[in-house]
Length: 204
Image (cartoon, rainbow, N blue to C red):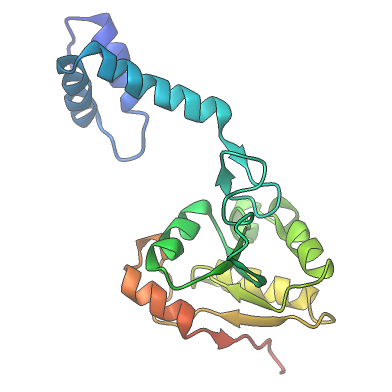
């Protein structure tokens, strides 16, 4: 792709680093911004810079937040007795869109995957165990994608909690095996949360 302007080329290259954005799509975005008023383009750029500089990670659940404790953890209307364990912040957004869950969350940051070198120590599992040991948590909903790696992660966490009086449940299998929560439609995901089932380890 030939450019008559190095400035345009640099902007296109920057946009094309985003997921799912090729050079042609990036060029369309850049040309669109060029046609906007300068103030609008500056506002757009400032929003991105401000987000990157000031975004925080919740010290309790590892969700993204404007503050050290996210608005879900600090909301007194949320049920602190129930924690929904998810892989990523995108899963929180997907579940929140269903309006079917009023508890709190805990973001693991992935799943156990030995092939990719991801072990329990690479995830936010220990902070989750500390939250439960601190008391007040009655149920963990394991809203983790139904994959082999996801099931391995659930099994590991369940084994760590076997001596604690906390109920462990998993989302109903309305979510297809091998699928990812963030791509599941809201109705199916919402029903899977509501129709969660008790988790049983092998031998129970």
